[in-house]
Image (cartoon, rainbow, N blue to C red; front, side, top):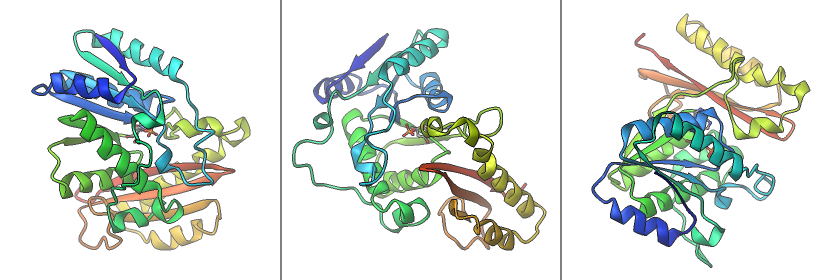
Length: 283
Ligand code: AMP
């Protein structure tokens, strides 16, 4: 069965009626691509009921960001979800939660924020100071409303994953978090709803970040100096940042790290391309 739910009330009633089942949640802002669908497929495989939320969350956009322009494509999102569902998951239950208006999520005069502490101020947080407060607040609200047993996120938004993991742990939420690999196009570009802002002439340049991350990974594996390389790359002002950090804590000190992550943001015009690569130092 596929069901579409538009209101908080109906969502609450639905979740309560499935209180003892395994419920998987896939939070998204819509404009679905194969990255989102990989999370949904995993949730459908592993749970009795899967809920994919589609909500462009205003609180995670800064004042000069693309909230108004963010692609809203509900009709084609529903078609993609249905086609995945009818291909392999017809025996499962699937809910698409797409709040009909902002008030369904944020009551009038809403003024509470879930804020994670210093992790929200590094990397992307330096450039988007209110972003992660918006993310943790919406994800906590969805957790509270839907009461999932399992929640599915993409490694593509690596800092977001570390922050949500920390929120789950700090607030002792009884939710198992799953982090799934980045889905890329045939050239290596990480799929993103914002890729469609790119012009045809910018496609080649959009691969710069992924290539650079791979070069840094290679230097690390070969135990060569990667720091000078990063400093040289950062002369290109299109990078917001390019950093190597501990994969679990995002600590800048990696001298004892078993696993590290190379993260970067590269801007083409107004489009911020976000990507990362994990390196296991035990390999
Ligand atoms: P968004 O709609 O951008 O908020 O993304 C919703 C979820 O999909 C987040 O957990 C993202 O990390 C995940 N996601 C976005 N792009 C990809 C991708 N290329 N591969 C895997 N997961 C992704």
